[in-house]
Image (cartoon, rainbow, N blue to C red; front, side, top):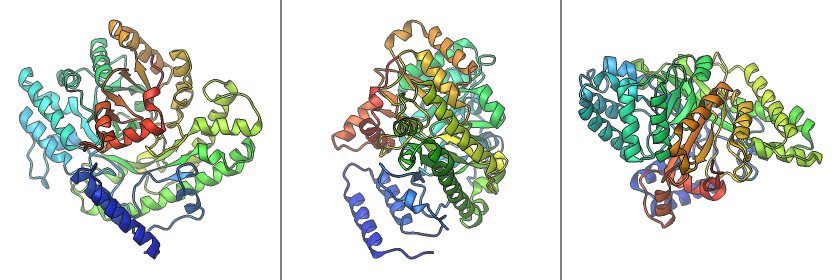
Amino acid sequence: MREISMERVNKTRNNILSIIKDKTLTHEQKVASLAGQADSLLEVLKLPEGLEERLDLDPTNKIICDLNEGHAPMRPRYIIPDYAKFMKNGSEFLQLDPPTDIWEAVNSLLIFYKHVPSVTNFPVYVGNIDELLEPFVVDEAEAKKAIRLFLTHIDRTILDSFCHANIGPRATKAGRLILEVEAELENAVPNLTLKYDKDITPDDFALLAINTALKTAKPSFANHKMFMGELTQDYVIASCYNGLKLGGGSYTLCRVLLGNLAKKANNIEHFKNEVLPETLEIMAAYMDERIRFIVEESGFFESNFLAKEGFISKENFTAMYGMVGMAECVNTLLEKEGIQGRYGHSEFADNLGISIMDIIDEFNNNHVSPYCYGADGHFLLHAQVGIDTDVNSSPGCRIPIGEEPEELIEHLAHCAKFHKYFPSGVGDIFPIDTTVHKNMDYLLDIIKGAFDNKVRYISVYEKDSDVIRVTGYLVKKSEMEKLKKGENVLQDTTALGLGASKNSHILERKVR
């Protein structure tokens, strides 16, 4: 363990005191923040040369970001338990038998969730909940009451909206009840995705999902065929929109801020041939070291009941190789070359973005990470959604807010150029005018056409909805207003949404 300076120790002590005195934080939020400060005093990882000069910078210059995973990771970032196995077998550690009715089913799941860790200290995946609950839907009125209490309990106790549930692709009685209840509750947690396949998912079920999404910004729609083709049928959507393997997860997620990186290049060729490849190598080495520590030193897989009882396995884990700021990267490089055009509005600009993605994709395909068994020894590329402190950095490969194409079909065509690169997650968000309620078949046709053309993931919400999708997670505008006034709010993602509203202009998206 390396020594640290007293200056850093004293800075951490000041941070601890600030957290304790912060009147906008709940007790639970203070405890989580204090744990992070304790972790920040450790230096146990063998950092690759060149990392610190890219990592420890202010937001306008930071090039590599570890997304607050801590200096000594004690568990994988994202954990995806096999809840169906739990429902079938129960758990020896939790002293729970398999459930026999709807009340036992929801109670068992809620107990299980309390023991699923992640980078947020809450579960980022709570199951394909329609399939989990469907066998117990006997009396629909009773089941709806149980599901309402189940979803309310999740919203009040899993205190951030990186918690994610799935439904579909098949229509189920439980799925319909979930969609009905979510539309009535209008809660931000859990996040929700419908695995959609026009050949499997009936139109009436998809339209019910669209109606719920317009009211409460969920479910989003995942291209089931696309994810199946890359991750097999045992994939899930977790956290923001992360495609991962059931019974596994992601050890880590680091990201390169391409917009800031482009500032270091003299021109396009310098960026492609030197600046980008060097940074890709350094970030991959850093991720490999984080994974090594988790697997070889943390003791997580040897001690945690999730692994010991077979709800997760190292065989299904990989890591997520993230990026943000493609738009700013392309625009900066064009300015350096004196070339006219903007990302999302110029064929040359978009082709430059594609060529950059090809370099990242080729690097990832050639890099072997010893413990990433869930993706044949490789990372999975991820279009990261950004964080609240990002400045002039658009999520993933998105067109910047305020520069969206006039026509939705043009915007979706642009999405299709980039979504193919990201099996572990990419997506775009479209606020919808209230008039769509008069013709939701129109919106369903758009989703069908987009998925036929290899768009991976689409999120919609009504422009006047209280629940909105920030980047990949959900918040309530009313809760952001409370926090802005200095009041406590239940979910810590509200603070992230408030920061994103200031820095990323999320409330100014073009309405479709």
